[in-house]
Length: 560
Figure (cartoon, rainbow, N blue to C red):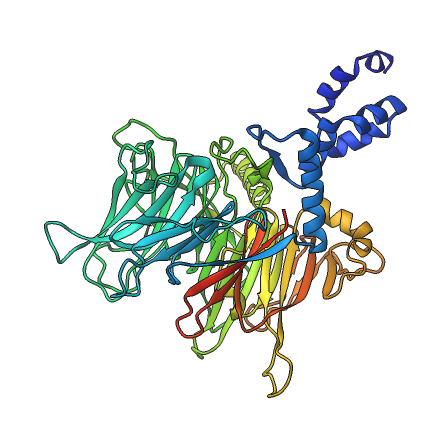
């Protein structure tokens, strides 16, 4: 100990910089020397705030450390107390509701070049404002493809990439439609992506059909996964399939495509893929083979199937969508703007699974549930299960029952259909929901108001709000705080085994123990807001046309 205390302040700071913040705070209580070094170091205090908030430093940022430290403290307090800095309206040039996405600071919406068909053949995007004096009305940029866009996926900060799946007629046989993947640069949408050897990749074909297939895309590192699910029987393919490509080389990693029952595939890691399975009621996890020059690449391998709670007789899982943003990439983001001092750490982000469950006896009866878990929790369970399989020499692909894997790492919510229209509702460790008042409004009564719910699953925020939450929100009107899974005096808390009622849809109530903080802010426009999205810095409230449901404008609610 004497030798350590004799080290210079600079050396101690370098040593402490490799320590996680919880251990760093323990070191701070060890002796006066450590207390002074840690308390007075801007670098260490910035590191503590980054790790507490699950953010990563942006080394390209030119701002000073004191400025960054103040910004992240202000940001976290703003989110914790619903103290947004400003609200500004952004009008959408071309109204079209269909394909859409939100990345870090970028909103992307489908648009139509002509009014002949209600189908997007281009993408309009805008960098959302970070200050209330920014004029974004003329900053929209367009990506025009001249073909029906079935879905798209941006990977802007990691790769400067927008990947689009389009439907085009075959040049030689007009009776056949081709489904192609088109890879464009976001910085110059008129150009094919410079890193893609095959900027247009053929996926599969279909005969003329009444409805286009359902498609979803996800990207991690060099890997890109696509679900193609045909909604009728006119497909030339025998099954609905999952395709995986190395998007840079154009190499297919599914020379024998994997059968899919539902769109919504998502990467847990560059080599680990999660595929929702509505038929089996499970989350199927696959390993993606590495890129190879071999003419016969390995098949993707199903590792485990995580079973969901059992449904009651007469109910079926209709859709199961998942979201985890900002998405995981093996390398630091290359195109993060230098004006942003930090970004979300994808390794600790939540995964949001939204389910629609229907009655096979009553087609008007629909129930909606949301399950939240952490990406890393699924990977940790996968590691344990693979170790068990190696130890016991058992085969991979086994189904794991819900009771074994789920209750300790998840949280369930029953939601209404109003919450399910816009699904870009999670980012980092936050999940948001817009709820409308129940019941009809009597004539002459004041217009009812929507409520915005922010759920924070950061465990360090839960602990902080258990102790300090009542003070953080004190004196703020129209704001309600719940800490669930906590237990601090004066705050609403539940037991560790929190119950989501099964409502007869499931064979029993669902247990979920994942703690969270919920902030509820009411008083938001009922007649105007029809959906809510979130990115790293802001909420995005959606205004739509009352008849067509097309997005007309968004309100940007900025926190920092």
